[in-house]
Structures are given as structure tokens and as C-alpha cells.
Image 1 (cartoon, rainbow, N blue to C red):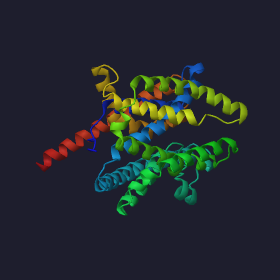
Image 2: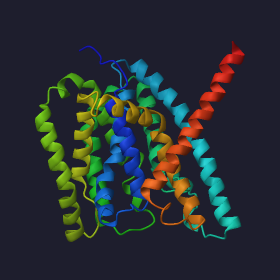
Image 3: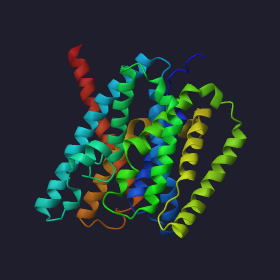
Image 4: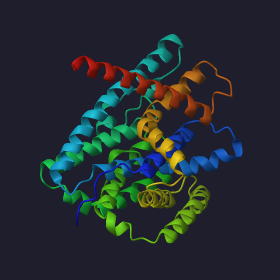
Length: 334
């Protein structure tokens, strides 16, 4: 089979932008109260979607290319995490020493960090560390010339996802509850490898009937709420487990089908925003939220939509500054 060229799919990038908004909704108050709980359920698909996108663009039929891509990504993600870690560490110091806020729950523990990528300075960087760990594992398998075994292991990885995610619904909500679910092995590897599998079998996947796929998306969308209710009723902890994964995969496949979901102008705008700003929004929306709440911001500012907009503006500013600096450096080098 001829390898599918790694080109930017504007629908996938648009999906990344929408997923970034959903992540903000998970960590902030949605301004319309009766919709908040429903959006929070749907928003659970965001991290699986991000991870599948990463795996999709990381994959190549050539093991050497995957080795090179994973090595480059390790360097890039490590630098990003260093920057974000410094920023959130400074926020932590400010809260503790200048505002007298108790931050004992955010203490750094080496063993959970090494095993479960639990950074603990803030509630959302676990995802980026999980992806970094996954990149290291992929790089290691490529180095050993055993990359194909990761694809063979996908059924086992999916089984681990279900076992540990279901188990986390039955255990009490303790400080360590996220260790068994939100880590590089249980969430990270299954969805990164799923993205790789979909890329490897791109021609076969695109033979799926589009109408059936849309029907499945609607069914999984509705089942998310039913499954959440069932878990709450019988277990006491939600959200659900199965529909979230299936909906994320179905939506991702739909994006690979359609290079343009919206009209050309809107698709261009959203895809450009997703490509340039989705990661920054993920990294820094918590910072914006914390700054607003620390200073007792009004309800107008302390909600998902406003925090998302402010974070997007900050990201645009950051990228503009980077672009300006790079252009000056290029001019000086010439």
C-alpha cells in the first residue's frame, strides 16, 4: 500500500480548535447553567481527539521517519512543558507567598510523576506529560526496530483503557484517583496508537459509508448522556466510559473523510486557529482562569466563553511576537 502523504487536513485542525474550546469548558463555568453539565459530558472527547490527531500525523510506513518525528516532537514538547512549568510555578509562588493561599495539595511528588506523569502543579498538564511519555515509548520502540509491535498491541491498550477507566468509576474520589485513569498508558497510548492505526489503514477506513458514520456519531452523542446517567445511578461516579471513546473516534474519522466541513472561508479561519492556537489555549486557559479568580473577577469574565476568548487573544499575541522575532532574525542572518 502506498503511504498516505502527511498533509494538513483543515477539518482536523478545525476539530482541534473546537476541542480546545471544549477543554476550556471542562475546567471553567459555562455561562448558561442548564447547558453546562451537558457540554462537560461532550467535552470529554477533547483529549482523545487531540491524542489521535498526534498519532495520525506522527505515523509513517517508514520506521526511520517515525523515529525522527518522535525525536523532534520530544524536543518540542519538552521545551513547551519547561515554559508552562515555569509559568505555573511562578503562579504557585505568587498564590502562596503573596496571597497566603494554601497550595499543599499541589505539592510535587517524584514517584507519581515518574510512573503516572502526575505533575500536580495544575490540573491539566498531565495530558502534555502523558503525550511526552508516549513519544519516548514510541521513539524507544523505533530505536529497537520494533515499532510495528505498538500497532499489534492496540487491542491490549484499548482493554487497559476500559479496565482502568471502569475501575476508576468504582474507587472513591481520593487525591490519587487520576493516577489510574489520566496517565500516559491508560489514556495516552491507546488513543495515540489509534491515530496511528487509522493513518496506516487510511484507505480502508475511508471506505466506511459516510451516512452510516453520521448515524453512529448521532447515536454515540446521545448515548454519552444515557451512559453518564447509568453510571451515576448504579455506581455513583460518572461520566460514562464507552460512548466517549466511540464518539471521539467517529468524529476523527469524519474529519479525515472531509477536508472541509464548513464553508471555505469559515473552514480556513477555524483550521488556521486550530493549527496555531489549540495547544496554547490548552496550556494557558487555566492561567487565565486563576488570574481572574484570584482577583475576584466578575461573573462576566469568569466563564468558559470569556476565558477562551482571552486565552485566544493571548495566544495570538504570543505567536505574533514569535513571528516578529523570527522575521528579524532571518533578516539579520541574510
